[in-house]
Structures are given as structure tokens and as C-alpha cells.
Amino acid sequence: MKFAIILPVYNEAPTLAKVVDRLSEFKEADVVVVDDGSTDATPSVLERIKVSAIIRHAENIGYGQSLIDGFNYVIEHGYEYCVTMDADEQHEPSFIPRFLEKLSRFDIVSGSRYLDPMLATDVPPVERLEVNRIITEKLHQLIPYNLTDSFCGFKGYRVEGLKKLKLTETNYGFPIQFWLQAAKAGLTVNECAVPLIYKDHSRNFNNQFANRDERLVHYLEVMDREAKSLGLTPVR
Image (cartoon, rainbow, N blue to C red; front, side, top):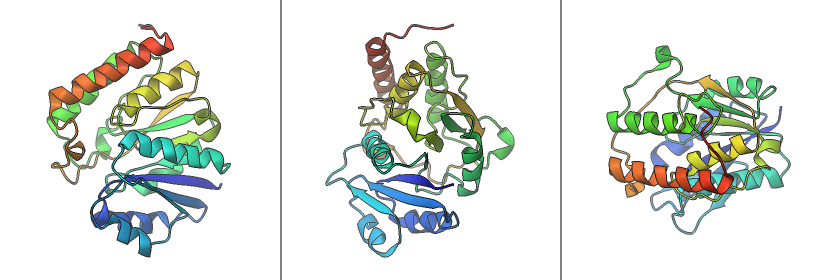
């Protein structure tokens, strides 16, 4: 099965080459890197490793825009399936086949770090776990998906489903807009248990919304705005 792996990166020089090397095990995969204006050695790393495509932003635009550009690429190039994952070694490539197998039955297969506690290798920062829980519970009031992890970036997608979405959220509130639009479009969803790995607790959203309360307010604003624009009302 030919598919694309989208890697959104920003200042991932220490880990990018190692992740891409792991992905080379998947001979049927095309790796698409979206470099969101990295200011470290990421561009030079990309010059010496082999990937199928590189999309570069002249400056840091945002995590959401990186995913939007990756989705546009796979749509324009006719892929049937794609996977998104981070390049910081916190997503385990060996789980990719589990996503692909489920994509025969679902439009979106979303990684969950909390579905199987036995897979956890680390303890997440308390404030991130709390924000994820709050947002996931509020999403349950708006959409029919029984999510346990609304922010995991390790996902598989049928590209036909992505064509039904009109994603515009450029920042870290992107997953919230994504879930609301997916529900409105009637896309089918299943979660896939993945390891909970936190290698660097100091990562702070590129200094954007590093404060827990500011980040939560931002997420709730995105949720409120998107829900109103889609005419969504709580289902339970």
C-alpha cells in the first residue's frame, strides 16, 4: 500500500535524521517534511537525508499550517492514505502498520497515549495532561467520537476524508478545529493505542501559549468559534 508520512518539523535537528532513518523501513511510504521556518540546523539536516518532498515556510507560521500544507500535498498528489507523526522521537514508527490496517474501515485512525496504560513509558507533564482532559471532555459535548486523547499528532487518514474539510487554524488549536469539522463532515473515527513517550518536558510550544491558562483559553476560543461556525450543538 503506497502512502505518505507527513512530518511537521520546527527546530528538530537533533532527532530528524534518526526518525527519517526509522521511516526508511517502510518502502511503500513517501516521507513529506514540512519545515515550519526552522532556525536551527534542520535545513542542513534536510540537505543530507533522503525524503520524497520538502515543503518550507520562510518563517514560523504554526503547527496547524504545517499539517494543512501536508494535507494539501497528499491531496494534490493523489495519495489514498497518509499518516502524520512528530519528528521528536515521541511517536513510535513501528505502530504505523496498525494505523494502516484500521484505515480499511475508518476515515481517521487517531493515536491515543491514554487508551492502554501498559504502553506508557513516561509520565506526561501534569498541566498538559489536565488541559488534554478538559478539552477532550468538552469535545465530547459537541461531537460523537469517544476520544480519550484529542491532541495526539500521530494519526492515519483516508485522503478522501481530508478533502471534505476546510481547515484554517494555523496554530496549536488545530486539532480542535479538525475534530469539529470531521464530525460535521460525518467522518468515521477509531482510536489506536500508542506508547506515551515524553523525551523532553522542557518543550514549550515554541514559546507560544507556554502558560497553561493562556493555552487553555486559546483552545476554548477556537472551540467556541468553530462550533458556532459549524452550527454544532452538544450531543450529550
